Length: 356
Ligand SMILES: Cc1ncc(COP(=O)(O)O)c(C=O)c1O
Image (cartoon, rainbow, N blue to C red; front, side, top):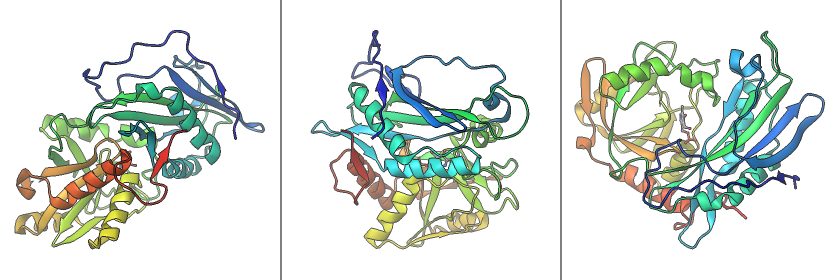
């Protein structure tokens, strides 16, 4: 057990009303978790304090060299009033891998899980209960040495903040239009693509702006070397159902190992739906879309769970998928994962963790 000190706010904020729009990432709860790392001492003073700005030296290394990582998961309120997290141990595991890749100290698993538990428990009244809403949880860590020069920092801060969020789609599971990017690349094998770190997201902005200007919601990345193989979407992993088989790019070092991706694969296996993790060329996708072999296409991620893809655009070709409708496997994965998250469906061991 970690001794997490709690300092409660003396001035609680007004919580959003049940019908207020909860625009993603704009509202933050009353408290946050903070812990400091000092080389030679380890993690010190884990604490929950009122949500507040940070004071940092302008030479703080994160501002100059980007040594930082983050995670994303959600807490849900079940109908019987329990507070549930979805596979939080997998977020810790991914955080650990990001830490290793980015030369940052690991966060002890029991501290990570206890900090999540204690913070979400304290701010549990902020969890919205309308269908499709949840409490988004953002753990993050960054380098704090006041130093100019490229090397791993000796000091870090690890924080967790919470944000009540609305349904990802206002009108249910709307299919999205996706732009297959053939100019910019997000990450390369051997780089930092599989780490959840800001550098990957800033690398994606130019293509995202371009795609938005063309009327597309998200970018689908191709591999950084040949620009030939499918990687992932801006904040989602991608799946296709082709001739009865669900296929998704294998984890190759340059894509993020999504927890929803892993859950979708495990569910398909349990249901006896053939599922393959392998290299998928963009030519195969174009061909499958042209011939009608492409039965479904969807993205997976914490924000939307699954997001059906209604159109893919590659070079000058626009490919309509499933007639702009949601396919049955996409729907089944969505219903099952959201059912487990809300405590309505019994999931595999450890998928739903109650905050106590
Ligand atoms: C680049 C990227 N890929 C995939 C995902 C999906 O990961 P997860 O299912 O763990 O949310 C995310 C979202 O976190 C992401 O940012």
